[in-house]
Image 1 (spheres, rainbow, N blue to C red):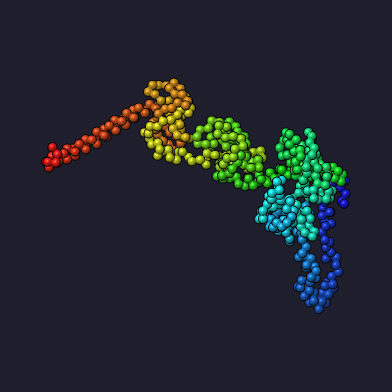
Image 2: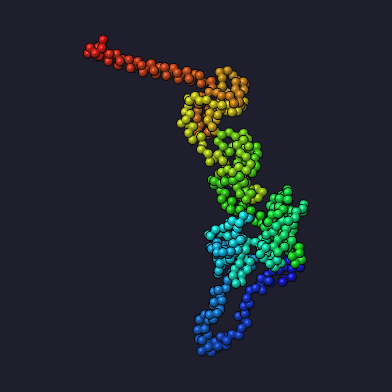
Length: 445
């Protein structure tokens, strides 16, 4: 077994090179062709020899075609597709000379259910490349102890271990073969650990970061694996982020100015309070809660990929139907509608006449008398009747009036009365002529 007194800084290239077959140096071999080329006959023979490829024995050709794993080395990380599950083994096509073999047990979750199906992509490490290419996702209790752990350390292959001791400095872990290891508390998770007891008794996956004294001093890190997985998810999420993209996320934090939404892998975007809904939202917590799943649209991005300066602007209301699309048809100028006072300003009051549709009632349009402030006549939440004076759908503005409601309604009533009288007057001569005709015919008295 290789000396493992201190593997830190140990050069593994020699060990890997020792596995490669030795190739004789062609330049060092005597060149019979060069001697033969000194004569014309020899030169011709040499030309024919150079034109014909060297013959190989059937055994050499068979060895080359059948040699598995020639294009991979122990510790390499490979990506492939699961092509077959047979008994306790599964077969992965990773583009090599032969399919890789991995234990089905490594494809099951903690409940014993298969996490992969035939056709699914799979990433694994090369554990052996001799008679066949053996793959593994982690080193477990089925492996031999010291050699397997040293190999896992050098190739950065994950190992499984059970947490059976906890203190304020870290976790005591028993890994395969009964080997003892230590995971510092700062390496137990990708975020700050408040209660280390939550790890006790759990079987987790770690990365060996230090291997000393022939395996008697082993240091682990779970954080390194979690961050690597998170980085992979983050890249996938960022590939989908673009203006106009529709995504799903989870509300992580609520502030007075909006909601932060986790789009996956810790990538967060902000839904400003004005982009939550077409309806007026005073506080995000009135309509959202932490942990809620929401659908959002990406409005714009800035410094995407920069951990400190990344800005992703999102919108929820962009997925709602815009009530302004039909405002002009529903509320033409001169329409009298009921509304509710939403807010009061020195220059007037904002009135909601439909969900998500507000109009401005200028202070000069509230009453016939001069007002110093709208609060002299109005209060927030008060129901009022207003008339639509102007509709600007492009700028999303409505101009309303209270003081003109009575006059407009009176004028409308006068117009209606006059229209009815006119209709009656037009109908009366026709009725009289018909009565006269019926009398002349002695059909009525």
